[in-house]
Image 1 (cartoon, rainbow, N blue to C red):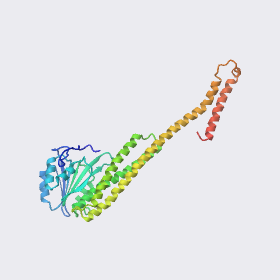
Image 2: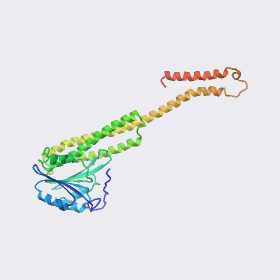
Image 3: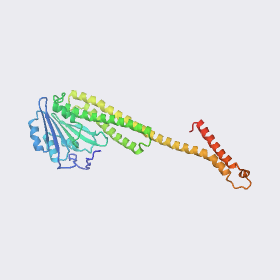
Image 4: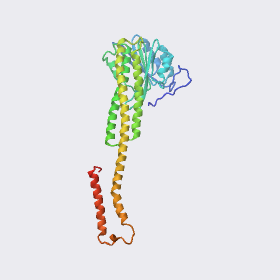
Length: 348
């Protein structure tokens, strides 16, 4: 999980911000655009960014905030865009479960954005308005760089359509991230299965448990993300066009496919655990088999040695000159017979 965690504040007002810092630094990446206009601004002070937003309210705005450590600026943004305080409180509280809900003016949803190694998770929230979309992130790193490049170079219809289309692309990038993680995880499981099949000492049980734990977490996050996408397909929020709603239906199918893939991988991990235990059992059986064969070989010759090791005075064989090599030869014959018998039965 991400090292930047929020602690749940119990018994506080729901409109209080659950921030790591109240007076820290917060970056504000702002893109103002339409089909013929594009301007990108990176600011750390709201007073420097607000004039640009006020001047271009007739255009589309994408405002990206990270990390969320400035309560005063967040309150100013909330006031400027007339965002419901309860909605903003949910947007900045990364300790909460991902969710989706809407007011008369804004639509809110949040996701857990997984990293490739499955160990780190970034909580990201979106606030969609009539001509504005605000994304709130824990850290600067994200999967949206391709979208920024397309906007800057005016590739495709992204700057010709409203912010709801941009909102779709951002959600689609998160679903695609889960698809990449699912494919990568499946390849890793196949490699892991080959390692276990070739050498049961190549991996231990704790490694399998760690893989299962990561898969369970990513499956949970992917399932919740799918539920949010499904809710967006049925939303009647005014800023979502029918065209974008249909596009959300397409990525909803992709999200469900990711869940199915991750479910199969969880079953695969359970199968690998069974394979691991089967190999350990087989290894133990081989050891017992070897000990049994050794016992079968040495018990007869131990009996012969013990028999002639008895200290009786009147044992005729003890006075015969060739008795010793005869007994040794008998032992060799017994061992040879047992080995040939085991090989004939294919026990060796």
